[in-house]
Image (tube, rainbow over all chains, first blue to last red; front, side, top):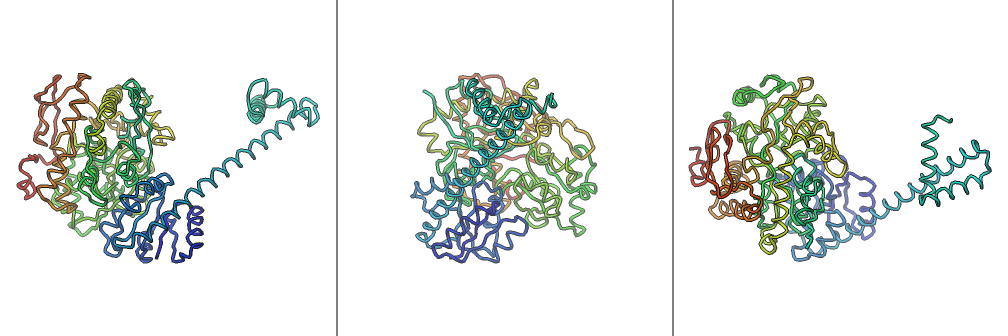
Length: 192
Length: 397
């Protein structure tokens, strides 16, 4: 089974590719660059095309599928019309699939299920990364605010942190927010 | 009881009515909560609607017909009980070509522009146009204009699909020579200096139908209440859309990241019919560039669906049969419009179809409620379309 993966996010495409390779599907190709893509897909002659639902190119692809002689008329599908649960899962995950007409449905189903799992795994990874990033950003501003207090208020590090924490508790805010506010004030006041 | 409706849309200026119905609280007033679901392709909007992930959607009128006829997807009967707007698109060409066919900077005589374009093509120039979707009014109005100016849109030019966000890039790289797209994407090309507007679609078919509110016919029949409420909220959103005192607020809302994620300045231009035809030319007022409310603009005339179907046949997108023609016309649902808007006091036309292109000057028409005067509804070439004489029309008569 030849599978084309179209994704503007090369990282997600790699995550999907890895999952498919793990189950022994090795005839894979990833397409991320819009320019010249149609020709390359035609040359690859896939049986199944996976594409993220948020990709604006879906309309361009469907047009090509309708008129192309080189591509054997892939059709938009979500497993089987009767399989509402799988369709829902695919839409929720944001993956859509095209399959060359007449290709064995049972085989597509497992590929799509796997793609859905990988899409979801990627979304989780990205969420975790966002959390880690904002934690890091908070850490950085707390450290900078502490340094400012040490310098301006002549406090030691423990006392600087205690002051930030007490202010946050008194105001019902996060320590990182108080630190941010302090740094902003410092910036606006020009170190006065 | 509060109903929740998930509404699919694409980030375009003509998605304004559902967005404003939500933001201005009109939906809430009617007892319906809208969850707006933004997508980036009509394929995704269709999938969500057809597979029940959205309850209704902003959709090009011809695509609602195509989905009903099963073109590209398994056939699902859709209903369009409310038109979300008329016109609002433009044809933008590469500056070097525009300079050869039009007076750059303003709205020209598009019959003359088209004649010069035809000469250019006869002299051997191969041109490629991009439209936003195979089954879009953009595609059919472009084709209508080309045909009306003596070109065969099926053989004399190439027409491909280009998603709106790529339109400016495609013009710049020479991938296409012209595009027919909605706002703000023409303005984006003009502002980048890679395109010049040579025609607006209001010049091709004045009061031509654009996006509709699409819903699965089965869903609408089973539970019409929430949809009626939504339509009343949309009607009030249209009232707000044409109120000049709200212009700034509307543009600011539409420009937000969760909606169009674009420039409030460019959006203001489209909403207020102030069009920038070419870089440095200054904005020009094009009356009724977008037409979202007055003259029962939201009424789904069955004859509009019939006209679109005729263009789909001419483009070779559908093979004409009586059954398909009936199914296409049945997508437009004036009966639902009347049932939903009766209590608002909105003007309600008495007829469900009209002679398209047949109104040259403002004319009073029969209504079952309110006084209704329709402005010019005309095609640039003066042809008319009578839905009862499709075969004659298709034969060129």
